[in-house]
Image (tube, rainbow, N blue to C red; front, side):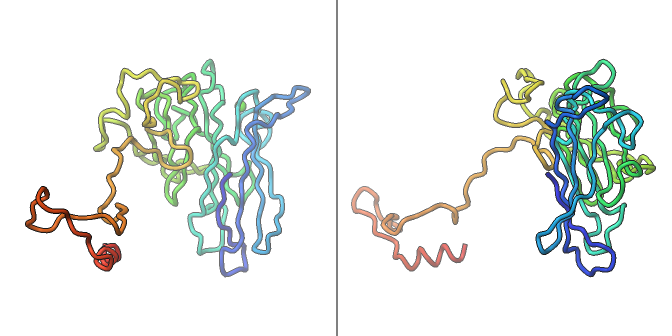
Amino acid sequence: MAIAPYRPLGTSTPADSILAIGSPGEGVVVGTENRLNAGRVVQIRIRPDGTWSYLRELKQGTADDEVSGTSETGDRMGETLAAVNTAPNAVSTIASMRLAVGTPGEGLGTATRAGAVHTFSMAGSAGLNDRWIEAGDGDGIPGTPGTDQQLGRSIHFTATRLYVGMPFGPNAAGALYALPMSNVTQGGTVAPVTTYKPGSGGLPPTAWPSDTPLDRRSGTAARPSGPALGAGPDGPPHVRRPVAEPKPSQVCRFPHQHQPTFGASRRSRPSRPVPLLIQIAGVRAS
Ligand SMILES: [Ca+2]
């Protein structure tokens, strides 16, 4: 699911919300065939009093309807969603209410599960605002669609960019692409894309040892504890980092704990307890 605040015309605050609900396991009937796990997305509007109303359904359907693509078995459209209101204090518009829909099971050519991303507006019809993004199609994701790349498995919106993670190739340790909003808006121009990948831009050379086998289907087996760059479930992905050490103020101490007296020999006499008031004052000041 993904939700964004919504301010209708004639109101002074973004008190409403629009919620997108993905159901990637949904079968979609095309002709007489029920295509399992084709997936779809439903959008609803929620009002401050808790009531809600249906807005629209997004599904690939057939090749000649208003949404790009065709519902096929295993597309899993809606497996990931990202939503943003880029101007929450203004009356919401088609341009400000953005929604991205991941379809990581999308097959492209001979590449199964290559993946794709749709972008829509949460405040307008699907057909007028749908932009299809796949590797190498000119929107800023480089390369060509590859088997099990699963583009769309990790997406995140900010007010200015759509972040698209590609944890399963073609870069062995994953990569993250920040696409400017114009790149993901129907009719928008293609602006330069920022690429984050191990070994460039100050990132360490690898997100995990390069000789570690990776299960490209599940993305979990045979992998050490750190995720691939681009593998975060909902937000901008991350690289492995060392476990943070606690700050002194975060270390729990009990009143009965003793500390050695200054200048005293630890072997010749026992330590004396630190007065409780001093301990409390130290915690409050830290
Ligand atoms: Ca499809």
